[in-house]
Length: 562
Ligand code: ADP
Ligand code: MG
Image 1 (cartoon, rainbow, N blue to C red):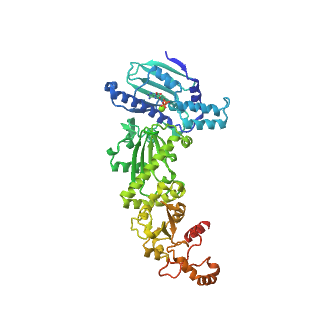
Image 2 (spheres, rainbow, N blue to C red):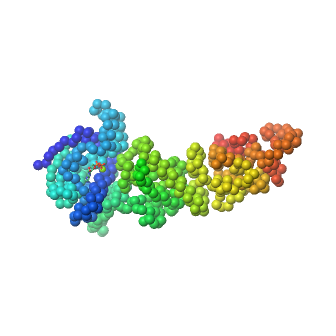
């Protein structure tokens, strides 16, 4: 005779909510079951490493899904470690998980008395979304659940059965094989898009959430060969190989590239791949990151989704998690897998999560290091990257100017002496002339040609001072904000007080009257008229009166105002 037992009070409360108030995200039940099966397989595999006899003749570790349309049932079965009688009571009758306990505490705070209003119900649904409910999520889709399980070292199996309302029954049973079989008798009122008896739906869910479970997830796959004739094959639904868990040496460049193109919807090979494990730090994680070679078309639009995908032990948790990637590196694609992520981590929780901050710091450093290494070792490739992403990096630096040390060495500029490889700031200062003072000179213009024809360039060329060419609209704003590089101040060749020659003051004194005359003649058109030694062939040039704003910036700002 089966024993009928009451669920623990907290479990009852939770089940009540699951059955009566969750109408969205029902799909996750399958992910939860597969993840439990995978854990159970991990456990038996671990035991078998010490003693291979543990597996007996059931050596092919796998998960099996069966669709039984006639009986409206879905079965998920594993040949993992199984559960003993006591373990079933402990695991499927109570709430041991600290996450779920937390959930219930929060729930108590959200609920005043026991009556539910619509507002409170929303709170609860949000809470459920945040904490997740593991095994119990089966009751979102099933009106009845039967668990048959046999622990690897026991002769008898256990049968557990419940409709999720108040009680469950449990008894010993005969079971031939080790492991756990979970039978869901599906609810009758599921929506059309919740057809869990459709093999394609199951395939879609497995691919989405459980593709990298390392054990095969098998299903009997039905196909119509000719009209009326069906062929049934054994199909493995998941790809099983989480590329990121292999060691770098085992992975070819081609494999990395194919994975990228398949998962991140890009036709082009990536510019760079960054694959690393962080161990022994506060958080353990593996990251597989890709720097694209082309800027996505949508990058500057609302449609572009930043962030990395999150996995926990090969189980997909979330797409585009922005919290693990600094904003200015938003073009980076990839994923992070950490055993420390909970399967039911929510976006709200993410924002407060300290581990994620650690992960983000690590990831940021790795990306910057990778870019620096490309810059140093594969300059031509880096220049190509720069031509695509330079704008993004510069905009990022502009927004995080307080952290300029991190990024400033990635900048490239064209200059009066650079070739197609352009010049970094570090290279610039290493080439500075002794009498150049503490200044990094720059000129602003729409193109290289325009700048080269500026009258002001003449004397700089003659003296052999390198001049950076700022041709991007953002460049000058950025340079102004940066103020200096390694203590060398940025100075525009067009700013009125660039003094190349100190003796120059005297000459200005001598020609005071002439200057005054010209000034009177030009009246309101100019603020001041000065001598300059910046010109060699041109007789005169216009400079900006305001140190802070150049003629070009004025132009840009005016355009913005319109
Ligand atoms: P979690 O997986 O986070 O521990 P669940 O509610 O998903 O929480 O599962 C509760 C427990 O039930 C698991 O920790 C495990 O001990 C047990 N369990 C669930 N499914 C299986 C299974 N297929 N095989 C063995 N044990 C299982
Ligand atoms: Mg679980």
